[in-house]
Length: 149
Image (cartoon, rainbow, N blue to C red; front, side, top):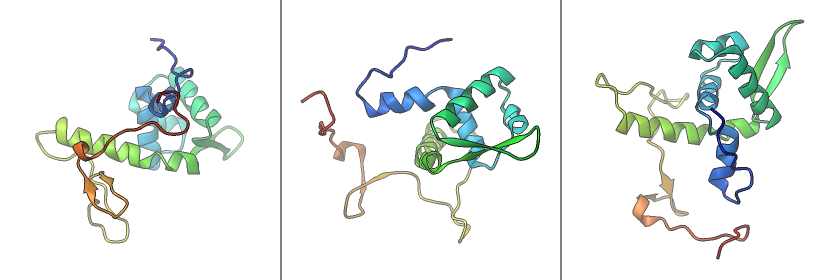
């Protein structure tokens, strides 16, 4: 299914969705954060070869992933610095899913700090002084790049 483009919208969420908003793309990113690097391994999600090819090409074109040849016929796809900065987005989606779309057996994926092995705190917005903020404590206002006042 072809979706309507958000490229014309002056909105950070719309612009981000234009690049990573397709569900197969999010699963590719999930797998990349889990250490998947090769085309054949990304296919394990169940997507078709042509869909995977298209999504990986887009991620490379957007400089979210880098395609590195490893021999004459194979390549690896590695997250770039720009791609790594999507980690909080995927953590937030996962934490939301664990809370609202829970598996009766418990949490599906536990994110831990490598150094300590302890689970990380659920994603949250924080004030400048480090306090966790509730959704009703956050307001939205137009910034200098906004077309609305």
